[in-house]
Length: 301
Ligand code: BG6
Image (cartoon, rainbow, N blue to C red; front, side, top):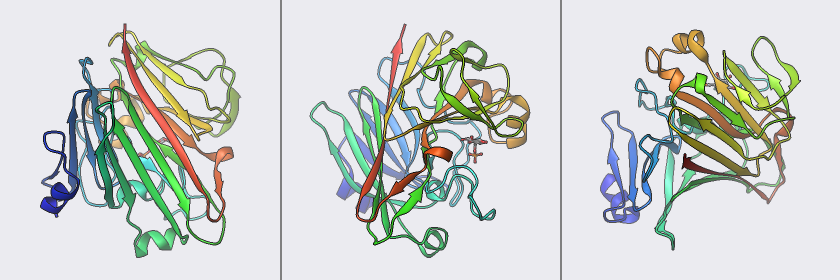
């Protein structure tokens, strides 16, 4: 399996596949622009660090566990075909099944600017079809360049329309949660999931003083995480996405979660998720496709 993957999709000195002790397969990417790692289970981006950045841009918990059928804490989980709890089936997994099932590599290559590109497709099974009985393909294309670009494409190959919720649930590495701000959502409405679910409006930039779990709706804006400790801004640009989720668990919830990297891992991460959730779920008509695209860039100051 590994040797076949390397023979078919490996790129000498730039892209290879290795087996982790847990039985999962990781793809390692190194090029002139930086380095990254991706787990084939879940098409889960685990790390990305562009050249010139002293710290990774993507946060991975130091207690993250790699295990068959389990989601990895940190990186960029792919939430699909629903976001959050399933609308009617409480036994179905939160944020959908895409992040915990195998994906296969369907393409790899180098772009003109020396970027490395990898495309994966979700492998449907009896279990996924039980929870999502629709004919479709789900592909994730990732391009590792000066910026990191991810394109999540849902193709409806059947004869009936369906509706999806989705997110690229990215954990960004920050210096300290109390010293960062997020700009780009001023004036937007959001569902505040802390202490119930209330619709509110964002006044000014976002700063963090406690658990924050918000689904901003009807926004295609770029967000900028300003990080005065690491002296950099992370730009989160997107298209095909009208929701942005901003999440930090804060200390109590992080302690309960148990895999956030004790004692202070939670202080060094912030999720800014490009999504189509709640009011912004997407109808994918029969025979059509929908693509959610993100592009991340770190700029030092
Ligand atoms: C966020 C949700 O997107 O993901 C939070 O808004 C949730 O409510 C968080 O706690 C983490 O989810 P999970 O399933 O990875 O623990």
